[in-house]
Amino acid sequence: MLLHKGEVLFRQGEIGGLFTVKRGLLKIMRVNEDGNPFLVNIIVEGETIPHHSLLSPAPNHGTAIALVTCEIERIDPGPWYASLHDDPAKNREIALLLQGKLRMMQQRIDQLTQVAPADKLRKLEEWFRQYIGPDQITGILTQEEIGQLIGLRRETVNRLLRSGAANGES
Image 1 (cartoon, one colour):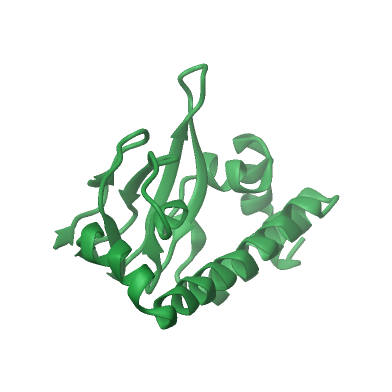
Image 2 (cartoon, one colour; image 1 turned 60 degrees about the vertical axis):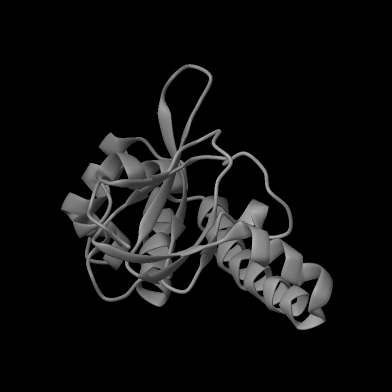
């Protein structure tokens, strides 16, 4: 299926199918108790989501929204879960998927542990280039979303981007 920028693949709280991102990028937005949306994850090509439902169905932790035009493959959950009992290689496949995502998330945690705001942004840009590609991060994410990913206010992100501080230009 084709999903265009801004279109929703699944919503927070729903229990649904599994999906593989063949091409494109998704963001996972979670609505907090106060009603404010918060960017919690970026899904890249090759990932099967939702991660928390790879072994058993569960309500979606957030809403998946296309950041760019995406090609998505829907996976029928019935045969998927049945294959877990019949095919030990499938369990290894899932373990490797989750291991890859864990490594990606560990790098994201490294971004948050940087003390200087410019270092946080620089680390995020490095992560972005490694997992997403050469596109500029600001062409994909808003300044608010960038700030949510690295624990900075939008105004700080704006100032850093204008100054070129993340690229060592200031």
